Each structure stands twice: as C-alpha cells, then as structure tokens.
Amino acid sequence: MKVLGIDPGFEKVGVAVVEQNTIKDTLLYSACFKTLKSSVFNERLFLIGQEINRVIEKYKPDALSVETLFFNTNQKTALRVSEARGVIIYVAKKHNMEIYEYTPLQIKNAITGYGRADKNQVNSMVKQLIFIPDSTKKEDDEMDSIATALTCLASYKTEKTSVRIKNNL
Image (cartoon, rainbow, N blue to C red; front, side, top):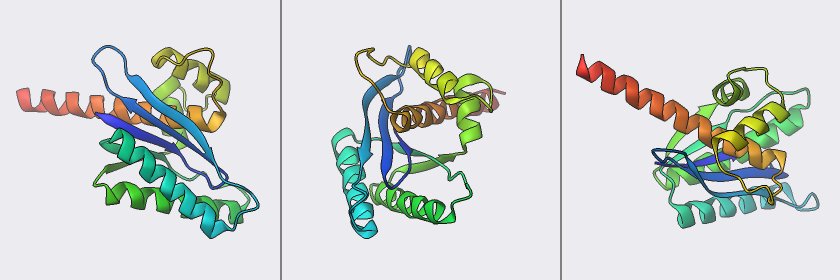
C-alpha cells in the first residue's frame, strides 16, 4: 500500500508518499510545496491542486492521509486552510483514492505514543520509523506529512490485523 500524506496549508503544503513494506516502510517522495504570498488566493488553490495531481499521477498512491484542521484564533487562516484541504481531497477522490483523516493528537500518539508530543519528539521518532537521509534537511510541514502517512499505515496495519483475528475466531 502507498499513502500520500499531506500537511495542508495554502502557503506551504507538506507532501509525502510512503510505501508499506514488510520490514520498514519506505519514503518514496517528500517535499514542502510553497505558493507565493503575492499570488491571488484562487491561483494558490489551483497550484496546490495541480501539484497534488502531479504527485498522484507520478507515484500512484492508494490512499490519502490528511491532517484535520487545527482551529486556532485566526479564523481567516483556518478558513483558507479548509479550502486548501477541500482542493486536496477533491483531487484525491478524482483519482479514486481512499481518504483518511487524522487529528494532530492522533498523529502524535501514533508516532510517539504521546498525544502531546512536541515537534522535536515527532521529528525524532519519524526518523527512527523511516529512513531519511541526514543530508536532506526537511521542513516541519514535510516532516508532518511523513508522520501523517506513517499514521495511516500504522492504522491500516492495525485494522487489517484486527479483521484477520476476527475472521479466524
């Protein structure tokens, strides 16, 4: 199974493609896609859609794992991130992908075992769970997208195992 992990935004979008393997999951691609602040918002949404479409067509993931929106005090930012999430989900559905959504708390818990972990703890565990070359500096949004994809794979493995156990009873 291949998962497209997304840390949504409209200025920066973390994007990662992770493939499930029997021994250790493999990072096939990751990036932090950026749009220009000077661009009109609708153009930024269009560019995000184009980039997600490009990644899906190139890597052919089976599922989209996207972080749910964390509401902060800035409602305008929250609304715009919601719109970006809508574009991302639309493009994934257009490619008949399964959609999985996780809260920041669920992602932190899946990666570190502690739902209140900080960025450094999450990043440290991500590097232990999947090979990331030391020479490659990853932005926080990119690391979050990898964590989101790994959360989906961990949930999928657990779900698959519990179904297998139920069926064997």
